[in-house]
Image (cartoon, rainbow over all chains, first blue to last red; front, side, top):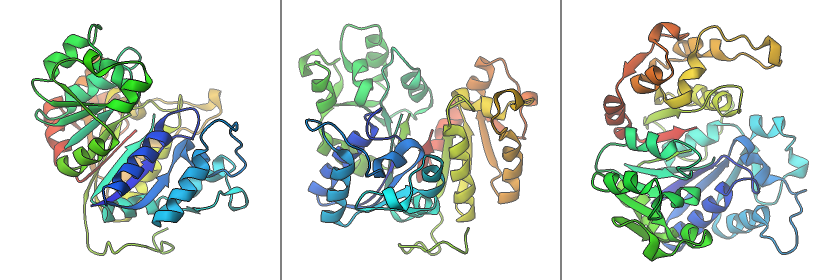
Length: 119
Length: 100
Length: 132
């Protein structure tokens, strides 16, 4: 089955991005396809490569990038939400790209299921 | 249709809204802070018990464990699943409404 | 916007039922405003779009919003513009409206007021539900 994922919160304040990551990993393990993860609202902070978590903490920004590379998942940060929050191409983490909200609607149409994680 | 709830019933009214608007017979998964609703012996227990006659209730095991709730403390009628089980529920039960 | 969009997936001719379930009040958090942006985009994709206002989401439609004192943009007039984007299915849950002491006359747009039971039937028919 084809999945689309929407993440509405950043990597630290809420568990949303962690839950989404675990869900995506489990879906891939079961042989499903994850077409795209779209990051909206404060979720755009998941694509900030300037983030430096403490050494003993998980680094979701890196984890998302690695998972995307391994499984060819399209990680899209919403441009309108990103610009408001100072997320631009030059600070964008590996594996992410910035594009419009149309990418969210498109994956909603293309995927069999769109699952939202947020606050 | 499947519904997910991720808020503690002691902090927000999300579970109540979900129960008011989710069609009877739907699947409801409690995860993140909503797993506190699945713990027996709270003021939310009666609500969840009564609702479990009308909905299929599931709770995410890793979120229970993280919050120090063991599976034998879970309200009767609520089934524990892992992330793989979460994925299976989404596959089997159609579009997901995330009550945020 | 539509002209600039470069699609990745083949979605040609696919029309899905998209329902936006707005449950949050405006201004206190950004969710209402940013969700409205998504509604407008989904309409541009010519999807079968509907918007349901539930819980504090009904406050998004309240008449008489004046945001000059908080220096934020009053986006309530945008709901009136939705019709121009062919988003005509606006639903408000009766129970949420009544719980907040409001009636249809207090709202900035024409909506269809539905009971929780009617709305739950409608929700159950959707292909994609986006809630914030």
